[in-house]
Length: 399
Image (cartoon, rainbow, N blue to C red):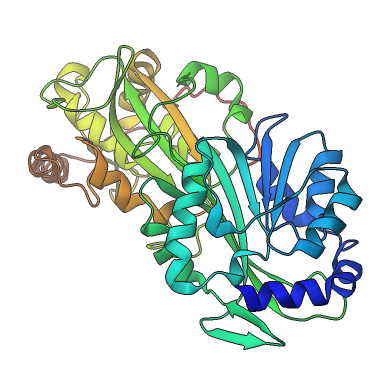
């Protein structure tokens, strides 16, 4: 670290001139979208002070540190902020910052100390605080022109975050160096400090009626969605389930699922629309709920159309729409790669209605009920729906 710091002290003017005017707006936007207005940001390893000044001009509160004494002076002159001379190894604040910006700084951290530094960042973030960090893309430890570099690739970044409990990966992507004379690739990572082991507790819940009236309330983004129920279908064990006010969390889904459907174009709005207004053929949750409620509704699972699809018929799906309107509420979290946190969800909570990856004791019973309902549907005649139409009230919003 001292050798690297000495390099920046000796080449401070050249480094400043080469970096302070680089346009970084395309990297600021993904980070700032997760922060509240007037958030407090720490620029960790601020270098020239370019990003510190940009955040300051946008109206954020900003603090900045750098280990190079010469760059600290230049950053102070550029920003008018009292930049502190400090290493990321010395970060000791507790729950202070809404966001920590570590752009091209942690790449000088020794690989065997990255977990330690991330733990310090985690500790310094407020609950739900967000960190951006970038590394030169690769998988090696190397020295160049008197500086030590720790390169990172996607798997290494993922493995690194897994070592920090309650750290949630929000976004990860590759870019090319913004400087016109450079062609190096960079890995960019945004992660969040969860306020709980997993942040299930919503700021608010949305009803079906509310989202049918204004579908644009659902973000057309990747993420995780949560189903809360006011009335639980009979027979579902809810012991140790998460509750919020009078609602019980019974099901969690992700959209898209790139692990099983790598070409999926789905998002939260598309998937929730499918659950709320689709049918049992396209929605696992609707099929499960309809089977559990079949005795109450009087609508068993049936073959429809040519006989290759199974739904509860138009009338049964409309009955289920009404039940959802009275009893089901949803919340969501935007997350760029939800498929990478799905496993953590099932490890940390009780979800009776989930099938995939779920270890809940009810899964065996539910799977048997679904299998029996399919067998019964095959034994019945194909339902005739000619001339019938299901009433679904949904304003069209492009996904």
